[in-house]
Amino acid sequence: MRYDYLIVGTGLFGAVFAHEIHAAGGKCLCVDRREHIGGNVYTRQQRGIWVHKYGAHIFHTSDRKIWEYVNRFAEFNNYINSPVAVYGDELYNLPFNMNTFSRMWGIRTPAQAREIIDRQRRECAVDEPRNLEEQALSLVGRDVYEKLVKGYTEKQWGRSCTELPAFIIRRLPVRFTYDNNYFTDRYQGIPIGGYTRIVEKLLDGIPVRLGVDYREFMEKNRALSEPDIFDKVLYTGMIDEYFDYRLGELQYRSLRFEEELLEGCGNYQGNAVVNYTERQIPYTRIIEHKHFEFGDQPDTIITREYPVSWKKGEEPYYPINDEQNSSLYQKYAQLARTESNVLFGGRLGSYKYYDMDKVIAEALALFNSIR
Image (cartoon, rainbow, N blue to C red; front, side):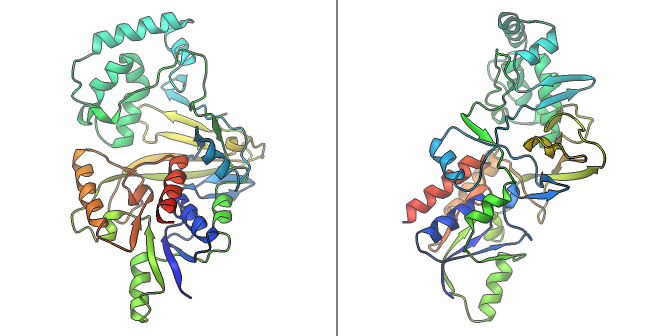
């Protein structure tokens, strides 16, 4: 069998691209080093609960075309992301809104909240913030920063906020309404029955080989004297790994997930996502999966999410887009342009964090560019 494309990775980017190639009459083969399809949006059912194995994924977009596209493959519920944050014995609504400010300062009106925030910003402001701490203080003042930004951010990045560049936080949304909807996008929800079903439908009719490493796959084909069973490659893995790190390693932050089944506990925390913003608590949040689909099962499953340092061979989650890494990526991107039969895309291939709607949009744009 000859294929037009070898698709490396069955996350959203690879799956959407493969689907479009297949729908246009092309032939493609998908390989993935994991033992399942779906990449980081993979969901698996346990005790009747759809568990997000790699952290919470809430689909949201303001792009009507992308919303209509993804609804071809799933029916979405009306879940609204409204996380809460725990700081000591205090509980706050997110994003920063009037519920947050009322709880923090005992006030009721937007004018009162604005006065406090503006005063604290003036007290903390600097003309040119030198680090993330100064940037955040200039945006939201000391109280919000100390209780809801500082510890969480330091855990996420593994460094003090005074050691992080200011550009990481370009803005911190502050809303002077009693609205706990985290996203402002018009369309949002969770696919009923999990994200894996979307990927299954995208890959319907397309051969997929799991537990297959790209480099080993290529070496095996060469050993069998079959190097040309496909014309082109879409590579959605790490761009520096593709080039065997010849220019150096790009840096990432990784995550460790600690999953726990609580038998007989129908409701552990009352919300799908609860952030823990104190630095001394090692995890950043607890996810209770059943609440994504309004479940009433007798048991519940929670996942604690721990940010960790990334080392080669571990799963990379968040690119560190500082000046050094961005410069190195540009060198790899230039090198990638010399690969005439290889396309690069997705979070790892582009060394860029994408929301799910942007992943789909980028995959569709890439397909349209090669038609």
